[in-house]
Amino acid sequence: MSEILIEVLRGNVVESVHRGDIVVVSCNGNVLHSCGDIGHPAFMRSASKPIQVIAGLEYGIAEKFGLDLAEIAILMSSHSGEKIHIDVLKGIIKKIGVDVDDLQCGTHDPLGIDAAKELISKGQAPSSLHCNCSGKHLGQLAATKVKGSPLEDYYKPGGGIQPEIKDIIMKFSGTQEAQIKLGIDGCGVPVYCMPLYNMALAYANLCNENFMNGRYIKSQNYVISAMTVHPEMIGGKGRFDTELMRHFGDRLIGKFGDEGVYCVGLIGKGIGIALKIEDGHTRAVGPAILETLSQLGVIKADEIEPLKDFWNPLIKNHRGEFVGAIKASFHL
Image (cartoon, rainbow, N blue to C red; front, top):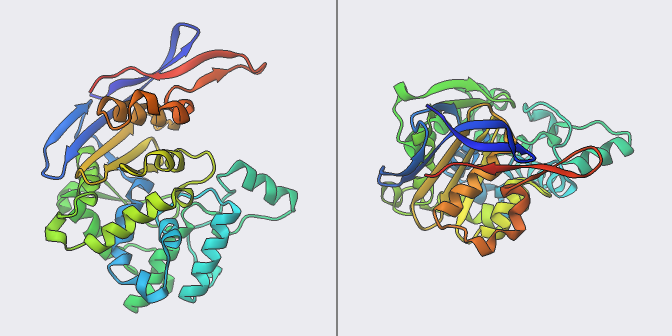
């Protein structure tokens, strides 16, 4: 059963709760800590992007197209559609020789509030580049070009490098065919459901330089370096992914997934953490992850100030008065 992880207080009264599951796994497969059901099946959603991109990196897209770390970072992002993101994406399009129309990720308003307001002020509509998954799609297009497969099918199950992505996800997560189920993500590409334990194992292996005797070490280093050197590309201004790695990128990588999923890898430790909030509410993610990192000793109490608004968010009423708070209420 999922446990109560987060309490939402109004005054001193618990008004709402968020149940969920957390597991901490080492690269040797041992469960180090947990709360709730470690076998909870869930889709990795965008938390799978740092694993998925390895399939493209193994095709040599970084070298083939001269991609730098900022460009590699945005290939695994859920970016906010800010100018810095759009500029980098346009540079990638030019390098790999595709058109914006080749992207099949769909279109939505930028996740960044300021970026969305800027588009409106200019009377412009968002393009597919503003989709938070456009970087992932460009990475898959690049690898599909190297592979020599038809570009128009790159996003479909069995098309482009989708078989290689599935294989990479299964290897890093330690899953067998029967343990995972296929779904379609918000941007149209396949996404996989697996036990929460295996999500954590995927990140433990991602941060283990000896995984499969170093077979994927070059790609793993690309992923970790890109995420920690350019956290602004992974999310954006004020986003949890970005702020977490901006302050603690010397020790971890972290990636959000929709519907209350979050995964963390501890660099050099070969340890992975996976979280699933049962009701999918994103407001519970920051407090749950930061409390987990605190209990594990990854983040010390005197280091929390820059992220206090994620760890223990205060609730304001319409008058701007503080009337409550969101806080963690679990012990691993």
